[in-house]
Structures are given as structure tokens and as C-alpha cells.
Length: 264
Figure 1 (cartoon, one colour):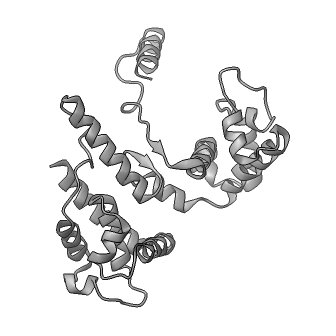
Figure 2: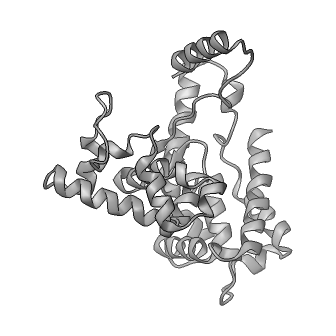
Figure 3: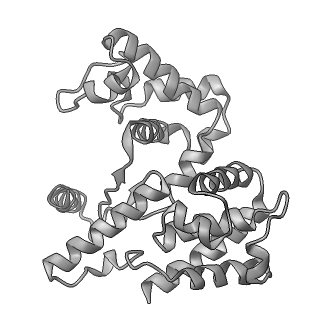
């Protein structure tokens, strides 16, 4: 990808008498946690042309027309709306939709993608932006970070500046302190059951993400019955957070604080 983007930048600059960067930042690649997340990721990519601000304000019919007529996408080849591209392998994605054959899979995939225009996948969007290393569950992200850290240590090569991010586990007490500071509560409050309160679910999510703890370990810290209970808390947080801007803001503040800790 570096060779491709560098080569195209040189070509573009020479052709247009231009200088400087053409692409924003380096190419990024995240590990994806299984078919479900990967399928949602392909939909996110294909819907990019109809999710820009000027198009989002248009009617559903116009956005569908834009999606099916957009020329700089492989989507048409997936749903038989345009000629298949020789350099695109369509079968792996279609097989995730339906293994009975291309015809059925293409119809189902088209419905899957078009459904994303009318109703955004907020849960996937939250997961997509949660980690610089992976797209998936908290447990998967923790495994990826541990693997990345081990590979860096084995290589003996100092980390590139662009990768100096969340690879070191933050002590649980530091994570809990960050949550307490943002919500304005003490540690004892976090470990008590409060009906409808999102503080304990937020703490659970942050401990899994930034301290690399298993759900069972988090259950012990938060005085919950089991790892399954922690999973339930995190799912509740993701559901409630969709429609609660104040909660989103607090979660973002905690994440920013802990990310700064990681980069120190």
C-alpha cells in the first residue's frame, strides 16, 4: 500500500504540476473479529458515497440511486448492477451472506447493504472507532494488543511514532480513578448496584479495553457475579449510549484521558 500510494502521488503531482501530500496519513489496517464484523465493515465501505453530508439530506430513493450509480466502487459487481472487476474477489464476502450460490447471495447482500441507508448501524460504528488495532469485541481487542506488544518486543526494534498507542495495559486503579473523576463519584459508589446508572457499565468497558482484563477479572473488581454479568453490563451501555449524548460525552472524556496515559 505504501508503494501504491507513493507511486500514485508522484504521478498525480507530475501530471498536475502539484506538490505535497495527496493522501491524509498512512494506510491503516485493523484486524477484524470474525465474519459478522467483516460483513458490517464491507457495508460501511460501500455506503460511504451516500453518507456524506450533502447526500444524507436527500430522500431514500435518491440515495439508493446514488449508491447504485456510483462509479468508483466495487459494489455494483457484488449485486450485478455493473460489470464485475477482474481484480476483485467477490466470492468470500458473498459466501458470508449465503453459501447456496451467487444468485441468492447477491440478492441478500444487496438488501443487507441497502438496509444500512435507512437505519445506521450505531453499534458497529462505535466498535469501528473504539480501537486503533482491531474491529470487534473487547476480548478480541485485548488479545490483539497483547499480540502486537509481544511482536514489538520480539523484534527488538523501537516502535514507529505512528504506533505509539494503546499497547501498554493501564493499571485498573488508574482506569477506575478516571471514571470517578469524570462522573464525580468515589470508588465505593462504582462497586454498588444503582438501578439505571451507567457508571459501572462504563467502568467495565474501560477496564476490558485499557487494562486488558478478562470479564471474569472485571467482575471481581466491580463486585459483579460473573464474567457474563460484565458482558451484560457492557451490552447495556452500548444500547443506552446510542441515544444519550451526555453519556457519550463522558465516555469520550474518559477515553481521551486514558489514551493520553497510554501515550505517555
